[in-house]
Length: 593
Image (cartoon, rainbow, N blue to C red):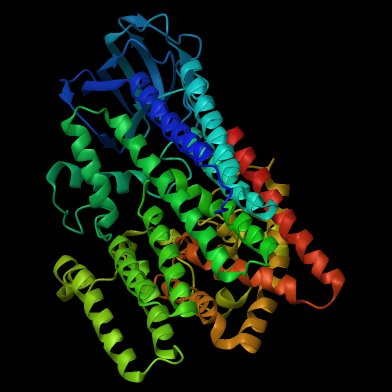
């Protein structure tokens, strides 16, 4: 912070940010409907109460639903309605609605209905008939994104946040490059907010209802479930305990389930913003004060990487895992550079939190202890003592997870539900599947398809690379040229990353050990997971999101240290083009959503 900083502008900026967030939260609570007294019946049978889920079916089945919709005086008028699989009939306060578009079958987008003329403050009675053609049955009501009240609230939130960020920037009296760095961070925050605005928790998510079921179990019972009673119940519990406690308190105060689910998404968004801040901190650790452009480039590359942005609206433990991992790596780098023991112990605490959030955190253990073993000017006696205490701390905090919780005698895998995956997801373990990396095939088929070999799902590195940008999701034919261009630019940037990693190991060796050891252990661990659990979905980049930090660092180092001016300029253009294309892709995704 500059000595010329303005406390007044800083105070006004901070107050504006808090006021804006508080007003938006208040408005969201006011306009969100509350659902109660939900009942269903099958084929004119008797009515039965339900809260979370409807019964599945093996054949075509019609279900009649009835529930109360309670609205505050200030409420939304436009709602998006979906059902699995079709909406056959809808009445609101005994008035049949949507006769021009109902029945309809559109589980992805549903239909938006203007119901303002039928709804009133207080309790409204809604009845629906939905058709389930097999499998799970469900329905969803949510406020349409273009509802004037919701749209106005989001616009005010963005304007307030941008104004607050500008005031903070002015108050800090930042230099040109500091402003650029702060601007990239602020843009990353806004991008995540926009993504959360338009993304329901089930969209571009992985088994969202399974994770929500775990959270709701903890909220209802204030205890952990048996690991084999639910699809996601085997997972490490920290994320579910924290979010479950929030749902428990919210339920006690009568907060609507829709709001509590949305709260969980906002918690993911806040975690994603903190993760981005941690990545910015790592950028300042890895590049010196003179390397201002390099800091900005690294943060910008991480801020727009789609697989990281997608986390900001998800309900699953990956959101917390990446947060703990990023700060753990940051403190390990700081300790490696300055030797301050507080950084080491903070890293160990964050390592324990990572393991308690998801067992993927175990891959950080060899990284941390390798750094301890190879730390220069540190007596062997100190290394042994610190290592023993650190291992004891990790064992005391996480050991119960692998013994009392999982049951060591059961001889079960860490990822319990892999035994229940469809055999159609199985892929072979061969030399070819672990060595092929066909850029042309990826350009032709840029999206992953975990079910179809034509998309290259059987090739580990191709699936892994594509999922860094697109996950397992298909963004349509219209965005396919952009997706292909992203992959081509990403591949070319990867060549610079390989060169940068080779130079760092060859010329600097131990100085960059935290980066190349992290990349090595994370990639090796993911490859071993794919080998032992040979399913296409095991190859997803979301299991190794932290590897993006060292890879992008090596990319920038490779560009900077290459001798040929043309190749250096080409590297900058390629990286900037890849960043720009990812922004275009995300903007299109926001618009489509």
